Length: 231
Image (tube, rainbow, N blue to C red; front, side, top):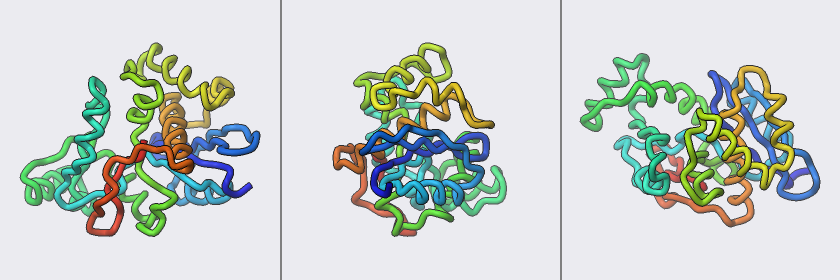
C-alpha cells in the first residue's frame, strides 16, 4: 500500500537494480532489474515508495567541487577512494571522453578520470527523468557511506568474499530474507549491485523516518537540484 515502502537504486551494467523494503507492515523485500531510469521511476511509483535513494550524483554544479564530497570522504576513512570526484556540469554535454576532458579543463582547470566519465551517461539519464521538484522523493545516496554508518566501521572491499559477508551480515539486520534475495539475482546484476541497492534503501528508510544524516542540502546547482548526500 502507498506510503509503506522505500527503495534504493544502484547502477548495474548500463541498467539499474532497485531494492524495495517495507517501512511498515509485513511485506517482503524485493530486488528488480530495470533497463532505464524511466522504468525505475515507474516501478517505485507503482509500489508507492515515499523515499528513493539513488547511488549516482544528482546535484552537479559548474565548479565540480562539492563540499559535501569532502565531508563524505572523511567519514569513509580508508574507503574514501570509493567516492569518485563529482564532475563539472559542463561535461554532461560532452560527446566523448576527449571532449569531456577539454570542457572540464576549460571550466575548472583540470580533467576527469575515465571512471567519472563512465558515470556521465547515467548522471544525464537520472537528471532527464528526475526533476528538481522530485527531490523530496528521489535523492543521492552513497552506499559505502551507508554501510559505514550502519556497521560503525570501515568495511573490507565489496569485491572480496569477506567484504560481501560483512555487507550481507549488516543487511540481514533489516532484511532478514536477504540471502534468498541475492540467491535469485536478476539477470545482468551482480551481488555487489544488490548490496549497494539495499544499503541505499536503508538510507531511504532513515530519510522517511527523519533519522538520516544529510551532508549538504543547503545549496543547489544551476538547474535547481540540491547538493546533498543522504546517509
